[in-house]
Image (cartoon, rainbow, N blue to C red; front, top):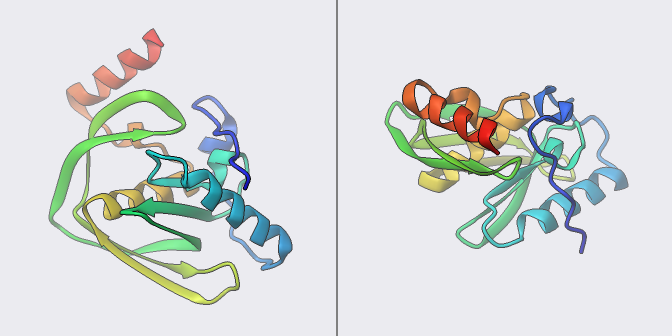
Length: 160
């Protein structure tokens, strides 16, 4: 079992769009195993490869006791209905802010063997899917904040 250290805000890998996975080999299998081991730590809903220093499009999730992964994910559907709950990030420890996300999200990609995967979720799962795909695009949840929520989060970052 390998729990990898999480890269934090300021590390350039978090702001760099991840590369598509092209080789489905033992290295990818090891990466996915590490992602799933890392996300299995209590209190974690998702971990994207850039968060452990790997610039590839893959993430693992841990929602309602179900752990899984998606390679080369893309969001194919977002509901018009939204949720506005507190969101945090392992790469920005200790800072939570109300973040608007779609209430329902659908992601398509492949698994570690290249077989098609389609994940649909509402609530926390939808939030996790959107949050992790953002990581793969070089974005952090604080980039989605506006108004007072953004000011408060930036203030908390400065005070850290």
